View 1 (cartoon, rainbow, N blue to C red):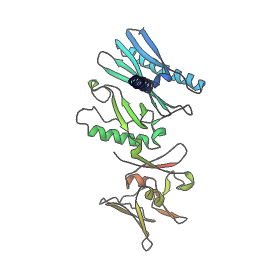
View 2: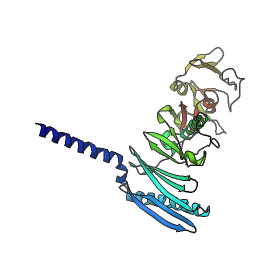
View 3: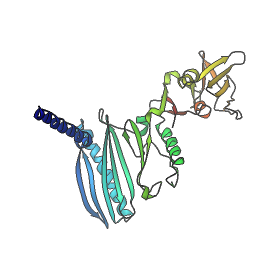
View 4: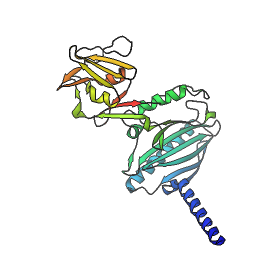
Length: 316
C-alpha cells in the first residue's frame, strides 16, 4: 500500500512538473534562438534574436521573420552610428491566447539605456495587430490618458516628460491587456529600466455606430450621431420637453441639456459653447455632432477604417 501510494505521488509530481515546464516554456514552440556575435565599425554586438516557427501560413512566417531581422539590423546600424561600444541584443516572446508578441531589446551596456522594437500578431488569421486593433478605435487615445494618469501618480520615478504615443508604438499583449513600452532612458532615467504601462481592456467600453446610423452634414465632414441610443449605452438618462425642444441628459450627479436647433451646449456650470452644428431632428431621432460626446460628456470618439463611429468610455 505504501509502495503504491509512493508511486502515485511520484507520478503526480512528474506530471505536474512537466506541465509547469510546458506552461513556462511554451514560447519555444514558436521560436528558435539565434546567436548574434559581430562587430560593425567599432561596435561589438552580441546576444540573441528569435526565429519564428510553427506559424500556420509559411509565407506570412517568412515575411514575419524578415521584418524581425530588419528591426534588429536597424538597431545594430543605429548603435554603430551612435558609436556605442558594446551593444547587446535580447528578446522576449509572450503568448496570450491567439496573440503572439515578439519584443526585441537593444542594450547599450555602458549606460544601460535601451531601445525596443515589438511585433504582435494574431496566430489565428496571420495578421499584424496594432493598439487600436486590440483595444478598438479609441485605443491609442485611451492609452495616452492612462499613461498620463499613471505618470502623474507615480511618486517613485522622475519622468522627463509625459509622452504621447501613436498606433505604431511598441506594445505587447498579456492577460488580454495591452502593455505599452518605453526603452530604458527614454522617458525616465535608465536606472529605472524599461518603463511599461498596462492598459486594461476591460476598463474601456466601446459603442459602435455604423455608417447606416449616422450622417455627414451636407458639404462638411462632420458626423451627426444619434444622441439617445449612444448616450443610453453609457448609462445616461434622457428626457425630452416638446414645449421648448429641450433634451435633458443626466447620469448620477451630472446633468446637461441641449436645445434642438440651437448651437449652444452646456457642460456643468461652464458657459455654453458652440460646436460644429446645432442638434437636429431627423426621422424622429435627435442627432448631435460627434464632438458632443467628447466636449460635453467627456467620452472618447473616433472613426475607424470601416467608417464606423466609435464612442468610448474609460475608467482608470
